[in-house]
Each structure stands twice: as C-alpha cells, then as structure tokens.
Image (cartoon, rainbow, N blue to C red; front, side, top):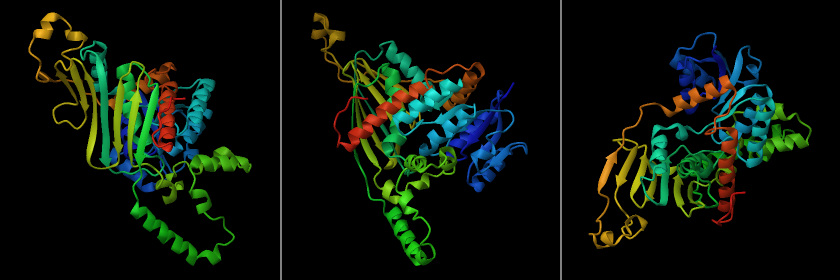
Length: 412
C-alpha cells in the first residue's frame, strides 16, 4: 500500500522531494502546499501532475486530507518547528529539512511530541546518505589513514543569502554531521568567529519602504506598526501571541511560509562569514570555513591522517572522493623501528586513488529510508529527531560562541 504524502514548500529543495516521491513505488503525492501560486503552477507543469493532486496555498487546506499519512517539510528554517509540530499533532509522520528547529528546546519538544504520538520524525541530513560519506566512513574505520591528525572543510558560494538564519545555521550542519559520523565521536569543545557584511540592497529597500509608510501614515494611524513585529523572529511572534492569549497554532501557521518576518534590521545581524573549530575527545580538530558571499562555490571536506588523506569534494570533475596514500608521519608510531629510522624520508604523498562510488542520488536514499521508517514505524538512527537534536545542540553552542566573539565552549 502506498504512503500518502503532502509536500510543504515547492522551492528548490521541495521540487526535488516532489520528484523523488512521485517516482518512488511506495509513495503517492496527494498534495503540494506553497503560498506562491506561481510555484504551484510551475510544479504542476514540470511534473504534469494528475488533477487528483491538490495544489494548496495554505497548509490548513490539506490537514484533514483522506489518505494522508506523512508530511515532507521543505520551507524556510524559521518555519520548521511550527509546521512539524502541527503535523505531528495531526498524527502524521514528518520528514523535515535541516535544521529541525532553530533552538534546542524546540527540537527536543518535537522529539517528545513524535514519541507521544508514536510517529516518525525524520530529518533530511542528505549528506549522511551520500555514497562518498558511506565509503569514507569505512576507510576511516579500517584505519587506512593511520592516526587521524586534523580535518578541514570549505562550504561556500555566492548567494543565496538567507534572511532567517546566518551562514552558520544554513551551512555548517552538513560538515559537522559528516565529521561526527566519520570520527564516531561528538565534539567536546566548539568555537566560532564570524563577520557580517553590509547589505546595501536590503538597506535601500528598507528606506524606500519607510518613505512609502510615511506618505500613507495619516490613513493608517490606527493600524499596528508592522515594524514592531517584523524585527523579531517568527518564534518570538509566537511567544508574544501566546502571552496575549492568541491561539498559537492559528497565529503561527498564518505565517508558516514567511521568512519575511525577518526584516533588513534582523538580516543585517546575521553572519555572512563564519569560521568554526570543533575539538573531539581524542584531540582531533576540525576547521570549517562557511560563507555565502564567496565568488566560487566550494563543497570540500578533508581528513588528514598519518598514512594518508581523504578528500570529499563534490565539485571535483573526477569523483567526489579521493584517497591520497602516503606517510605524513615518518617519525610516528607507524614507523618507529630502527630500520624505518634509517630509511629515506618520504618526499610527500605517494599515491592518489580516485575512488569509484555507487551512482545513486542521496536524496533518493533519504526518501526511501523515510518511507521504510513510516511503513515499519521504526526510527532511523542516522536521521532521527534525536540525532538531529545533538547537531542542534552543537549549532546552538556555536552561536553562543559567535556572540561571545569566539570563546571556546562546551556543547550544553
């Protein structure tokens, strides 16, 4: 029996989810929800959707849809908590884009709600389903790199610049998840420093908006000033609504697809460039460079060991995974005999191996695993809500370090 699914969000990633669920033999897309009618029309045209597929501009229009069993959320990060909570309360299984929520408390609440409802909460950590990450994990577990020294990653591009999260929350979770998986450890200390660059276009638009508001102020004096609300996050709006006795679900779902609640004032405080340092229990350190204003796109993660280096590079024209074999520690424990001490010193890495990988789309594996979890009602250890909570714990601590100017902190 096919699992009925509604996809919330028909943007770049939502379209990929729709495609995969349409093609999967065990799923049936019953509805697509997006406030932008043009996006809905584009999806309908792109996939030639059957007339039975409901195209809705509001999530409430499909909440009681017959046959609906699961919801896939591909909306701005600031909306994930509200939508996931509403879906779980309705008794639906949930697949959510990363991050699951924007603070630790909300992420834990969602896990508790999923457990109470006996429904699966699955987070789309796509890279953990990438064939290169699987192969890399095996290589490291087999100690082919020798003693691990350090790691570094670059995740940069030139736009899009998010308006509801900074570069840290938008980009870092991928590399943190990969390092944690490859090392089979969680960092015991984290540190982040960052920079915010002026957003001239946003400032110009804001000034234009203020001018229009002043022109029409005499006709709207009795209306609440929108800027009183829009300089805070959707989460803060919800808190204020609860204090004022407004129904939480109605108030927050009304703004479910509205990252515009974060105005230029808020967006200008979001870090565009972030440097992250993760320290693990065995002393291994990982350094991550994150930026959405770089002229070149980078998706590269490297682990350096005493016997070789492993490189995961999505932008490589050859393959996304390369193993460079060679002893980088000729005085170390791998070569501590008298004979090796007398041997010629290595001049560098001796062999570069381009690794062959299974040709499968990571997101297809995500969707397949999610459907299996729904069918069996059992969690996926790799992408469960609980696993995502630990990543959010790290991100939350990194955010605190960022606020404190790079102070090293223990994930709390």
